[in-house]
Image 1: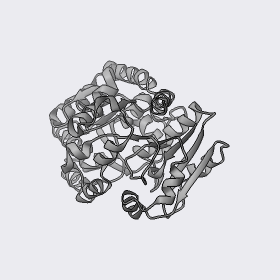
Image 2: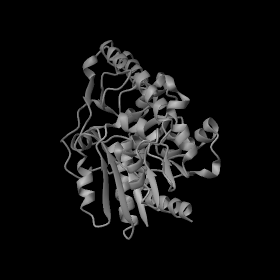
Image 3: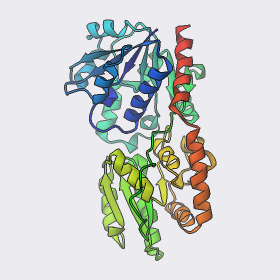
Amino acid sequence: MKIGIDVRHLAGGPKTGVGVVTDQLVLALFHALPKSSFAVFYNGWNAPPQELAEWEGRENVSVIRSRIPNRFFDVAAMSGLLRSHARELNTSDVHISPHMLPLPQLSIPRILVLHDLSFVRYPDLFSPRRRAWHARIRPYAQAQAATRIVVPSYATKRDVVELWKIPDEKIHVIPWGTPPVNTKAPGPGPKASSRTILFLGTMEKRKNVKGLIEAFAQLQASGRSDMRLVLAGDLGWGSGEVLELIKKLQDPGAVEIFGYVNEDTKRRLFLEADMFVYPSLYEGSALPPLEAMAAGVPTIVARNTALPEICGDAVLLVDPMRSDEIALAITQVADDHQLADDLAARGRVRAQTFTWEKTAASFCEVINEVLA
């Protein structure tokens, strides 16, 4: 069996979100299907990611590479102009698209991954440029044409059925594995006297960092000077509003902004954190909370979309639209050591149930179904 996999989302710098899923899924499938061959597809003018060279060194892996700028590739692919690319891709028995990037017309089954439909449900949470990109790649048409659709949660499946009227039987729910977390190395030393609240993710409207800052402002106004807030992640659309809110805090110096962090810094932040707070407005999965849970950090997440489904009873759930509820949950974890220890223990156990081996095994079932 020959399996094609589109890894274009590994381009463009550090891996987050979809890039993490693509990387881990490819590796898991390599291990799950050692007797199969893989045709890994990558397009881009710049140098390919390091992973491509490592994978190409495997006996059962070949790389199909194109150097067309992606914005032109997308248009050409949907216009039927990339016939030579189509011929190469169609030499596989099945093709897996870990993201909804357009491809030349395929004559083989295509398994399309939809991570979420936030851009359909809440388009106002995205920048005009991002909305234009979604319109250009025509995700709805791709979903209709795909042989099967894979989603990481039942919450996302409900959205696909409700918003796009895709038949239920065409959609498979396959949760992602917990991202690998290294917390075994020695820690940074004694924790600071202040309680450290950690947020990890892109600072954008959908992640609702604004709600977290408003909750932190309430904590400072109530006299809680023992709190420290750490924000780790790239600055996204709407982050300017967050930065302005931080300036208006009673003590702006209690907020530390890291930007994107590498794995070593992330490990240190998890080790220092007293709690992890993720009040996102919409999630198709729960990768950052799972990382925190695996690291043994008491976790607070929003009571919406896929977050309760994935995190279960191992977290505290809050209404992301109520900053007072977020502030109360933070206070509970900070002041109740038994609660914090219980959340840390339950989080570790819960995170261990989500493995990439399970994800790959479920993918193999879908592959066998479409080939049958």
